[in-house]
Image 1 (spheres, rainbow, N blue to C red):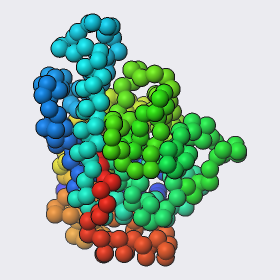
Image 2 (image 1 turned 135 degrees about the vertical axis):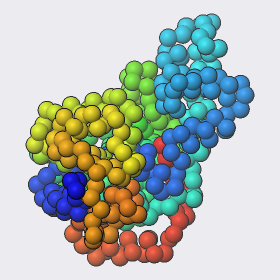
Image 3 (image 1 turned 180 degrees about the vertical axis):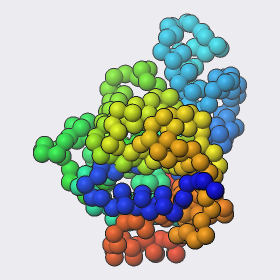
Length: 385
Protein backbone atom coordinates (compact mmCIF):
# COMPACT_ATOMS: atom_id res chain seq x y z
CA UNK A 1 0.00 0.00 0.00
CA UNK A 2 1.40 3.38 -1.03
CA UNK A 3 1.44 6.19 1.47
CA UNK A 4 3.60 8.56 3.48
CA UNK A 5 5.55 7.18 6.44
CA UNK A 6 5.05 9.40 9.52
CA UNK A 7 8.11 8.00 11.28
CA UNK A 8 10.38 8.72 8.34
CA UNK A 9 8.89 12.20 7.96
CA UNK A 10 9.52 13.13 11.59
CA UNK A 11 13.01 11.60 11.50
CA UNK A 12 13.87 13.75 8.48
CA UNK A 13 12.40 16.82 10.17
CA UNK A 14 14.48 16.17 13.29
CA UNK A 15 17.62 16.08 11.16
CA UNK A 16 16.73 19.43 9.62
CA UNK A 17 16.03 20.97 13.01
CA UNK A 18 19.39 19.71 14.29
CA UNK A 19 21.33 21.87 11.82
CA UNK A 20 22.45 24.93 13.77
CA UNK A 21 23.17 26.91 10.60
CA UNK A 22 19.52 26.96 9.49
CA UNK A 23 17.25 29.92 10.03
CA UNK A 24 14.35 28.37 11.95
CA UNK A 25 10.99 30.08 12.42
CA UNK A 26 7.60 29.09 13.79
CA UNK A 27 4.17 30.50 13.05
CA UNK A 28 1.43 30.06 15.65
CA UNK A 29 -2.22 30.36 14.66
CA UNK A 30 -5.33 30.35 16.84
CA UNK A 31 -5.31 26.55 16.98
CA UNK A 32 -2.21 26.59 19.17
CA UNK A 33 -4.00 28.57 21.87
CA UNK A 34 -7.10 26.42 21.41
CA UNK A 35 -4.90 23.40 22.19
CA UNK A 36 -4.33 25.06 25.57
CA UNK A 37 -8.06 25.29 26.21
CA UNK A 38 -8.78 28.83 25.05
CA UNK A 39 -11.67 29.64 22.66
CA UNK A 40 -11.08 29.32 18.95
CA UNK A 41 -12.03 32.12 16.56
CA UNK A 42 -15.62 30.93 16.15
CA UNK A 43 -16.15 30.51 19.87
CA UNK A 44 -14.58 33.88 20.59
CA UNK A 45 -16.92 35.55 18.12
CA UNK A 46 -19.94 34.10 19.94
CA UNK A 47 -18.61 35.11 23.35
CA UNK A 48 -17.86 38.65 22.23
CA UNK A 49 -21.32 39.07 20.71
CA UNK A 50 -22.94 37.84 23.92
CA UNK A 51 -20.93 40.31 25.98
CA UNK A 52 -22.03 43.34 23.97
CA UNK A 53 -25.17 45.12 25.08
CA UNK A 54 -27.82 46.58 22.80
CA UNK A 55 -27.70 48.52 20.57
CA UNK A 56 -24.04 47.55 19.99
CA UNK A 57 -24.87 43.85 19.84
CA UNK A 58 -27.32 44.44 17.00
CA UNK A 59 -24.89 46.70 15.13
CA UNK A 60 -22.04 44.22 15.42
CA UNK A 61 -24.26 41.27 14.45
CA UNK A 62 -25.07 43.12 11.24
CA UNK A 63 -21.37 43.53 10.47
CA UNK A 64 -20.78 39.82 11.12
CA UNK A 65 -23.13 38.82 8.30
CA UNK A 66 -20.88 36.95 5.85
CA UNK A 67 -17.74 37.85 7.81
CA UNK A 68 -15.72 36.51 10.71
CA UNK A 69 -14.72 38.47 13.80
CA UNK A 70 -11.66 40.09 12.27
CA UNK A 71 -13.46 40.81 9.01
CA UNK A 72 -16.21 42.59 10.91
CA UNK A 73 -13.67 44.68 12.81
CA UNK A 74 -12.01 45.71 9.57
CA UNK A 75 -15.41 46.63 8.14
CA UNK A 76 -16.24 48.83 11.13
CA UNK A 77 -12.91 50.62 10.84
CA UNK A 78 -13.37 51.14 7.13
CA UNK A 79 -16.76 52.72 7.76
CA UNK A 80 -15.30 54.99 10.45
CA UNK A 81 -12.55 56.13 8.07
CA UNK A 82 -14.81 57.15 5.19
CA UNK A 83 -17.65 58.85 7.04
CA UNK A 84 -17.70 62.56 7.64
CA UNK A 85 -19.60 64.50 10.33
CA UNK A 86 -23.34 63.81 10.32
CA UNK A 87 -22.95 60.97 7.79
CA UNK A 88 -24.29 57.46 8.33
CA UNK A 89 -23.73 54.05 6.74
CA UNK A 90 -25.42 50.80 7.79
CA UNK A 91 -26.79 52.50 10.94
CA UNK A 92 -23.26 53.61 11.91
CA UNK A 93 -21.93 57.12 12.23
CA UNK A 94 -18.22 57.80 12.53
CA UNK A 95 -18.60 58.18 16.29
CA UNK A 96 -20.70 55.05 16.83
CA UNK A 97 -18.29 53.05 14.62
CA UNK A 98 -15.36 54.12 16.81
CA UNK A 99 -17.34 53.29 19.95
CA UNK A 100 -18.28 49.87 18.58
CA UNK A 101 -14.64 49.20 17.69
CA UNK A 102 -13.56 49.99 21.25
CA UNK A 103 -16.37 47.90 22.75
CA UNK A 104 -15.56 44.85 20.61
CA UNK A 105 -11.82 45.04 21.36
CA UNK A 106 -12.55 45.40 25.08
CA UNK A 107 -14.86 42.38 24.94
CA UNK A 108 -12.18 40.33 23.17
CA UNK A 109 -9.60 41.25 25.79
CA UNK A 110 -12.03 40.41 28.59
CA UNK A 111 -13.03 37.05 27.13
CA UNK A 112 -9.39 36.08 26.67
CA UNK A 113 -8.59 36.54 30.35
CA UNK A 114 -8.84 32.88 31.27
CA UNK A 115 -7.36 31.17 34.30
CA UNK A 116 -8.70 27.85 33.00
CA UNK A 117 -6.11 27.54 30.23
CA UNK A 118 -3.77 24.59 30.39
CA UNK A 119 -0.31 26.05 29.81
CA UNK A 120 1.44 22.67 29.41
CA UNK A 121 1.51 22.56 25.58
CA UNK A 122 2.91 26.08 25.37
CA UNK A 123 5.44 25.39 28.13
CA UNK A 124 6.74 22.39 26.16
CA UNK A 125 6.98 24.57 23.06
CA UNK A 126 8.76 27.26 25.08
CA UNK A 127 11.24 24.65 26.32
CA UNK A 128 12.21 23.97 22.71
CA UNK A 129 12.61 27.71 22.15
CA UNK A 130 14.70 28.10 25.29
CA UNK A 131 17.01 25.21 24.45
CA UNK A 132 17.57 26.23 20.83
CA UNK A 133 21.15 26.98 19.88
CA UNK A 134 20.92 28.21 16.31
CA UNK A 135 23.37 30.66 14.76
CA UNK A 136 20.39 32.78 13.73
CA UNK A 137 17.75 33.84 16.25
CA UNK A 138 14.73 31.57 16.48
CA UNK A 139 11.76 33.68 15.35
CA UNK A 140 8.20 32.98 16.46
CA UNK A 141 5.40 34.76 14.63
CA UNK A 142 1.91 34.70 16.11
CA UNK A 143 -1.49 36.04 15.12
CA UNK A 144 -2.84 35.28 18.59
CA UNK A 145 -3.61 38.12 20.98
CA UNK A 146 -3.04 36.09 24.13
CA UNK A 147 -0.09 36.00 26.52
CA UNK A 148 0.34 32.22 26.64
CA UNK A 149 3.70 32.15 24.87
CA UNK A 150 5.10 35.03 26.90
CA UNK A 151 3.96 33.41 30.13
CA UNK A 152 5.50 30.07 29.17
CA UNK A 153 8.84 31.62 28.20
CA UNK A 154 9.00 33.62 31.40
CA UNK A 155 8.14 30.61 33.54
CA UNK A 156 11.19 28.89 32.02
CA UNK A 157 13.33 32.04 32.45
CA UNK A 158 13.93 32.06 28.69
CA UNK A 159 15.14 35.38 27.24
CA UNK A 160 13.22 36.82 24.32
CA UNK A 161 12.64 40.12 22.51
CA UNK A 162 9.23 41.25 21.25
CA UNK A 163 10.10 44.57 19.66
CA UNK A 164 9.35 46.69 22.74
CA UNK A 165 11.86 48.25 25.13
CA UNK A 166 10.86 48.88 28.72
CA UNK A 167 8.80 47.25 31.46
CA UNK A 168 5.90 49.28 32.83
CA UNK A 169 5.09 51.07 29.58
CA UNK A 170 7.40 49.75 26.90
CA UNK A 171 7.97 51.61 23.64
CA UNK A 172 8.25 49.92 20.26
CA UNK A 173 11.72 50.03 18.70
CA UNK A 174 11.50 49.61 14.94
CA UNK A 175 15.28 50.03 14.69
CA UNK A 176 15.93 47.00 16.91
CA UNK A 177 13.40 44.87 15.05
CA UNK A 178 14.98 45.74 11.72
CA UNK A 179 18.62 45.44 12.88
CA UNK A 180 20.91 42.98 11.11
CA UNK A 181 24.07 41.20 12.37
CA UNK A 182 26.99 43.60 12.80
CA UNK A 183 24.86 46.63 13.61
CA UNK A 184 25.02 48.14 17.14
CA UNK A 185 21.34 47.40 17.86
CA UNK A 186 21.56 43.73 16.83
CA UNK A 187 20.67 41.52 19.78
CA UNK A 188 22.41 38.17 20.45
CA UNK A 189 20.92 35.15 18.69
CA UNK A 190 20.33 33.54 22.08
CA UNK A 191 17.33 35.83 22.52
CA UNK A 192 14.33 34.36 20.72
CA UNK A 193 12.22 36.83 18.78
CA UNK A 194 8.47 36.89 19.48
CA UNK A 195 6.52 38.87 16.88
CA UNK A 196 2.80 39.46 17.54
CA UNK A 197 1.53 40.30 14.05
CA UNK A 198 -2.01 41.19 15.11
CA UNK A 199 -1.22 42.88 18.41
CA UNK A 200 -1.80 41.69 21.94
CA UNK A 201 -4.06 42.11 24.94
CA UNK A 202 -1.23 43.91 26.72
CA UNK A 203 -0.70 46.43 23.91
CA UNK A 204 -2.43 49.77 24.45
CA UNK A 205 -3.06 52.95 22.50
CA UNK A 206 -1.34 55.94 24.08
CA UNK A 207 -1.82 59.22 22.27
CA UNK A 208 -0.45 58.47 18.81
CA UNK A 209 1.62 55.43 19.74
CA UNK A 210 1.24 51.78 20.70
CA UNK A 211 2.86 50.72 23.97
CA UNK A 212 3.23 47.37 25.68
CA UNK A 213 2.14 47.24 29.31
CA UNK A 214 3.48 44.86 31.91
CA UNK A 215 0.16 43.12 32.31
CA UNK A 216 -3.19 42.38 30.69
CA UNK A 217 -5.17 45.56 29.95
CA UNK A 218 -8.08 46.07 32.33
CA UNK A 219 -9.57 49.32 31.07
CA UNK A 220 -9.88 50.55 27.53
CA UNK A 221 -9.41 48.74 24.24
CA UNK A 222 -6.30 46.72 23.54
CA UNK A 223 -4.29 47.38 20.38
CA UNK A 224 -5.33 44.28 18.47
CA UNK A 225 -5.97 43.42 14.86
CA UNK A 226 -5.49 46.72 13.05
CA UNK A 227 -7.06 47.41 9.71
CA UNK A 228 -4.43 47.73 7.01
CA UNK A 229 -4.82 51.43 6.33
CA UNK A 230 -7.23 52.84 8.87
CA UNK A 231 -5.01 54.07 11.67
CA UNK A 232 -2.80 57.10 11.97
CA UNK A 233 0.65 56.33 10.63
CA UNK A 234 2.38 56.29 14.05
CA UNK A 235 -0.18 53.85 15.44
CA UNK A 236 0.39 51.51 12.52
CA UNK A 237 4.17 51.37 13.02
CA UNK A 238 4.37 48.17 15.10
CA UNK A 239 2.08 46.26 12.74
CA UNK A 240 3.74 47.45 9.55
CA UNK A 241 7.24 46.79 10.86
CA UNK A 242 6.33 43.31 12.10
CA UNK A 243 4.62 42.41 8.83
CA UNK A 244 7.78 43.43 7.03
CA UNK A 245 9.83 41.35 9.48
CA UNK A 246 7.60 38.37 8.62
CA UNK A 247 8.19 38.81 4.90
CA UNK A 248 11.94 39.20 5.36
CA UNK A 249 12.11 36.07 7.53
CA UNK A 250 10.45 34.09 4.75
CA UNK A 251 12.92 35.49 2.23
CA UNK A 252 16.06 34.56 4.16
CA UNK A 253 17.89 31.64 2.48
CA UNK A 254 17.88 28.20 4.13
CA UNK A 255 14.85 29.03 6.23
CA UNK A 256 12.80 26.25 7.87
CA UNK A 257 9.34 27.56 8.78
CA UNK A 258 7.05 25.46 11.00
CA UNK A 259 3.37 26.44 10.89
CA UNK A 260 0.81 25.19 13.42
CA UNK A 261 -2.76 26.05 14.30
CA UNK A 262 -3.33 28.22 11.23
CA UNK A 263 -6.49 27.83 9.12
CA UNK A 264 -5.23 29.53 5.92
CA UNK A 265 -8.15 31.95 5.89
CA UNK A 266 -6.02 35.11 5.72
CA UNK A 267 -5.24 35.88 2.08
CA UNK A 268 -2.37 38.26 2.85
CA UNK A 269 -0.56 35.78 5.08
CA UNK A 270 -1.21 32.99 2.59
CA UNK A 271 0.37 34.92 -0.24
CA UNK A 272 3.44 35.63 1.88
CA UNK A 273 3.88 31.93 2.59
CA UNK A 274 3.13 30.75 -0.93
CA UNK A 275 5.21 33.40 -2.67
CA UNK A 276 8.23 32.63 -0.48
CA UNK A 277 7.93 28.88 -1.12
CA UNK A 278 7.87 29.52 -4.86
CA UNK A 279 10.70 32.04 -5.00
CA UNK A 280 13.10 30.54 -2.44
CA UNK A 281 13.32 26.87 -3.28
CA UNK A 282 16.13 26.11 -0.82
CA UNK A 283 13.86 27.10 2.04
CA UNK A 284 11.09 24.91 3.43
CA UNK A 285 7.69 25.53 4.94
CA UNK A 286 6.14 22.69 6.93
CA UNK A 287 2.45 23.24 7.66
CA UNK A 288 0.81 21.13 10.39
CA UNK A 289 -2.99 21.02 10.04
CA UNK A 290 -5.17 19.78 12.89
CA UNK A 291 -8.03 18.47 10.75
CA UNK A 292 -7.93 15.07 9.09
CA UNK A 293 -7.59 16.63 5.63
CA UNK A 294 -5.48 19.49 4.34
CA UNK A 295 -7.34 22.79 3.69
CA UNK A 296 -8.06 23.24 -0.02
CA UNK A 297 -6.20 26.55 -0.28
CA UNK A 298 -3.05 25.03 1.16
CA UNK A 299 -3.38 21.75 -0.74
CA UNK A 300 -3.58 23.49 -4.11
CA UNK A 301 -0.29 25.29 -3.56
CA UNK A 302 1.50 22.41 -1.82
CA UNK A 303 0.77 20.10 -4.77
CA UNK A 304 2.61 22.54 -7.06
CA UNK A 305 5.40 23.57 -4.67
CA UNK A 306 7.64 20.72 -3.43
CA UNK A 307 9.25 22.75 -0.63
CA UNK A 308 5.82 23.56 0.84
CA UNK A 309 4.88 20.48 2.86
CA UNK A 310 1.50 19.95 4.46
CA UNK A 311 0.79 17.37 7.17
CA UNK A 312 -2.75 16.76 8.43
CA UNK A 313 -4.18 14.07 10.67
CA UNK A 314 -4.95 11.52 7.94
CA UNK A 315 -2.94 12.69 4.92
CA UNK A 316 0.08 14.68 3.81
CA UNK A 317 1.47 16.42 0.75
CA UNK A 318 5.21 15.86 0.71
CA UNK A 319 7.33 16.77 -2.28
CA UNK A 320 4.17 17.60 -4.21
CA UNK A 321 2.71 14.10 -3.67
CA UNK A 322 -0.60 13.76 -1.82
CA UNK A 323 -1.08 10.46 0.00
CA UNK A 324 -2.58 9.02 3.15
CA UNK A 325 -0.38 8.32 6.13
CA UNK A 326 0.68 4.69 6.59
CA UNK A 327 -0.15 3.47 10.06
CA UNK A 328 3.25 2.52 11.57
CA UNK A 329 3.77 -0.61 13.62
CA UNK A 330 5.85 1.37 16.08
CA UNK A 331 6.24 5.11 16.38
CA UNK A 332 7.91 7.50 18.83
CA UNK A 333 5.65 9.18 21.39
CA UNK A 334 3.31 11.84 19.95
CA UNK A 335 4.12 10.99 16.31
CA UNK A 336 1.16 8.62 15.92
CA UNK A 337 -1.81 9.09 18.24
CA UNK A 338 -5.26 7.47 18.07
CA UNK A 339 -4.77 6.31 14.49
CA UNK A 340 -3.76 9.70 13.12
CA UNK A 341 -0.62 11.76 12.67
CA UNK A 342 0.01 13.19 16.13
CA UNK A 343 2.02 16.28 15.17
CA UNK A 344 -1.04 17.74 13.47
CA UNK A 345 -2.07 18.60 17.04
CA UNK A 346 -0.02 21.45 18.55
CA UNK A 347 0.14 19.68 21.91
CA UNK A 348 1.93 16.68 20.38
CA UNK A 349 4.04 18.89 18.12
CA UNK A 350 5.26 20.88 21.11
CA UNK A 351 6.23 17.70 22.95
CA UNK A 352 8.04 16.40 19.87
CA UNK A 353 9.96 19.66 19.42
CA UNK A 354 10.99 19.56 23.04
CA UNK A 355 12.59 16.17 22.51
CA UNK A 356 14.52 17.32 19.42
CA UNK A 357 16.43 19.99 21.34
CA UNK A 358 19.61 19.63 23.37
CA UNK A 359 19.12 18.97 27.08
CA UNK A 360 19.57 21.90 29.44
CA UNK A 361 19.45 20.95 33.10
CA UNK A 362 18.09 24.23 34.57
CA UNK A 363 15.43 24.49 31.86
CA UNK A 364 14.60 20.79 32.13
CA UNK A 365 14.18 21.06 35.89
CA UNK A 366 11.84 24.04 35.56
CA UNK A 367 9.92 22.31 32.79
CA UNK A 368 9.48 19.18 34.89
CA UNK A 369 8.18 21.17 37.86
CA UNK A 370 5.72 23.06 35.65
CA UNK A 371 4.40 19.96 33.90
CA UNK A 372 4.14 17.81 37.01
CA UNK A 373 3.28 20.45 39.58
CA UNK A 374 1.00 22.90 37.76
CA UNK A 375 -1.85 21.14 35.96
CA UNK A 376 -3.54 24.48 35.26
CA UNK A 377 -2.20 27.96 34.68
CA UNK A 378 -2.77 29.75 38.03
CA UNK A 379 -2.62 33.32 36.73
CA UNK A 380 -5.40 35.27 35.04
CA UNK A 381 -3.15 36.75 32.36
CA UNK A 382 -4.05 34.28 29.65
CA UNK A 383 -5.89 34.94 26.40
CA UNK A 384 -6.31 33.80 22.81
CA UNK A 385 -7.18 34.95 19.36
